[in-house]
Length: 60
Image 1 (cartoon, rainbow, N blue to C red):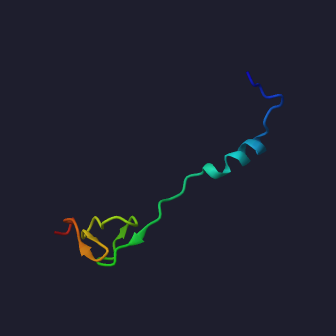
Image 2 (cartoon, one colour):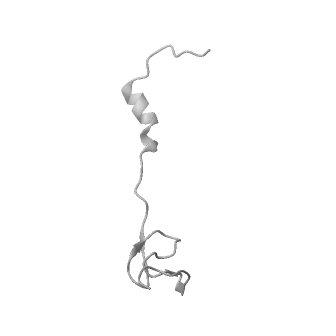
Image 3 (cartoon, rainbow, N blue to C red):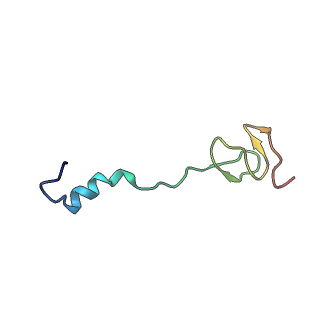
């Protein structure tokens, strides 16, 4: 069984984990109602996607 010969320092451990941080989701605005929404998703407020009404939104 492999066992490390030396203790991994806090610096080396944290450098290895540097890319694991969480990122906030990217957001875009709806062109119909200017509501903030997720990109590539229908707007939950008005129900438009790429300029077309695809679902019933909360306004209707």
